[in-house]
Picture 1 (cartoon, rainbow, N blue to C red):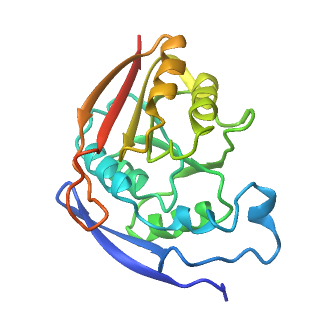
Picture 2: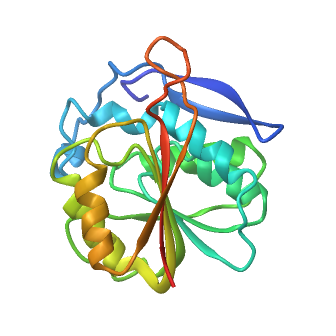
Length: 218
């Protein structure tokens, strides 16, 4: 039996219900064999993969109607996989990745919980090459730029896994590290556009700082 607690919650996205198993709260932790530690997951960050964040909900809603025909799509930092589930139900060519050792298990469980076919998953670190992952037309993620070094790491990851003509979408609650990431993406030939993206604030109210950043390279 796992030494962490979970719950199953339902989110209504794009007019459909999605059931997901999540950690009960952000106080959960279990790494009896040191697998997470070896992957670079600290005890403080261990539970972050397993809860649904406001930016993640906002991205899932965006993907419920975003044009996907003919696109190979990668969700970065998929966590429990809500956005990937939304895309899978739409028939998208979706691959999910995360570096947390439990992300694949949670994604598989949630895929089965919603009666969907298996979603391709890769354990992928931003720190180095992931030769089995491949390249994609559309790379998406939510709340990825929450530490100072994430801008360079994420831009490097994109450079290795985006097709020559590609789009990158980042749902951001206003963390403050988008500017250095934007500069690095511009150096790769991407043009940035921004739109407001309503997402829940710290007390359940919409946050005026939520934004969707789109980076396009033709």
